[in-house]
Amino acid sequence: DVPTKMAALRWINMLLEKRKGDMNEYIKDLLPVLLRTLSDPSDDVVLLNLQVLSRISLNQTEGVEEGNKSDAEEAQFQMVLNAILSLFATDRQLLETRGSLIIRKLCVLLNAKSVYIRMADALSSYETIGPEDGPEADETDSLEFVSTMVQTLNLILLTAAELHELRGILSRAFLESDRFPISRRKKQQQSSHEGAQVFAGLFKCWCHNPVSTFSLCLLAQAYDLSFALVKKFSELDVTVGFLMQIDKLVQLLESPIFVHLRLQLLDVDTTYHAPLLKSCYGLLMLLPQSDAFRSLNERLTTVCNLRDNLGIKPSLLPEDEMTTIISQKGLSFKKLLMRFDEVIAQHKEAKEASQSLVFGEVEQEPIEPGRLVPSGAKSGLMNQFANKDGSDASQSSNGVYRGNQTVPSQFVPH
Image 1 (cartoon, rainbow, N blue to C red):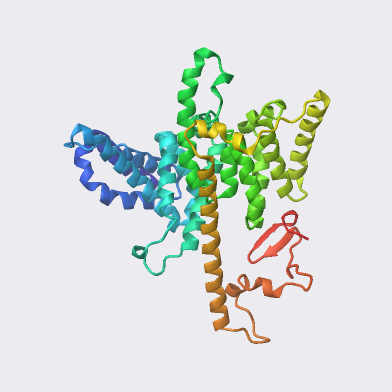
Image 2 (cartoon, rainbow, N blue to C red):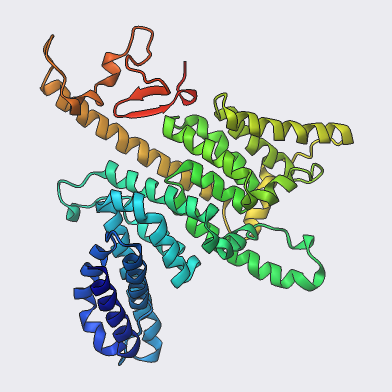
């Protein structure tokens, strides 16, 4: 029952706090049990369980030389995060129901920046599947998990109060120091360097979800990079899920998190205004006619009217000069875009390989005329049962039925 679990977790937490060295040998036995407890129906049990996991992450190893203590702590920190990610990869239901709670609590108990950087590094190991993963390993499932995990982490980053400090670090990543008084420039340069390093660490992993990558650039005020990314969206497979992510991002642009972006739209005489405005218009061109489209269109129309009324011409820079801010922080504009292209190509190749495998199985077992199609095969063969005009044959009252999912009709091309 819940009181027994709570008492046991408090006892383990106390032992980890008071007898760190003696508990180290039991960590490997405790960790699987603690991970299973994350699925407990009681939120109180889960929160206390996360406190114990955090205690393990920060647990110091006695008897280790002073110079190696930090390495031992980092190893245990990474071990706990890797275990949690492995649990999410095998239990997607837990990721959907408790993923946000677990990650936010870890960011409170531990350092949010460290948690995000470590998780981003760990997720990179899911990009490739080696022989040691076994013949049943599926690269498509692995990449889909990374994309889903990045989308979850990004949404928490943009909305959770626990991530306020990390958002502040990223928002100062590419600010020019000459915007600040001389007395504050040195501190701003240090803060900007830290933000650029965090941005680079997250960007490498965030590329697995294009919309999350774009929103990360907006948060870090890397508008020249966001404009370059939105132009590449035309090369992507624009799915219903992709459009729904953009719709959600437009809603978030109206939230207090992006108040700096909305106010910067008034700086019509600055060099960063043109790429910022084009980035927003890029989102507008991707969206179908919907409430999000109208909301963003009205805001951008107001900005353009302001510029026309002031009689200010847009300040445009050549593309080779637009990358100056990013390069000043020690990052390569071209390498960042190359990383994005490589990840997108990897997802495309994995999807094509998966589809060819599915079609190969279908060809081996043709469906005879008049034979009922199994429910499991319906989603894979849905395109073969479309109407002559190309539309899906089955519809619901609120949208279009695709496989086992009803999606809003505004996201479906007519």
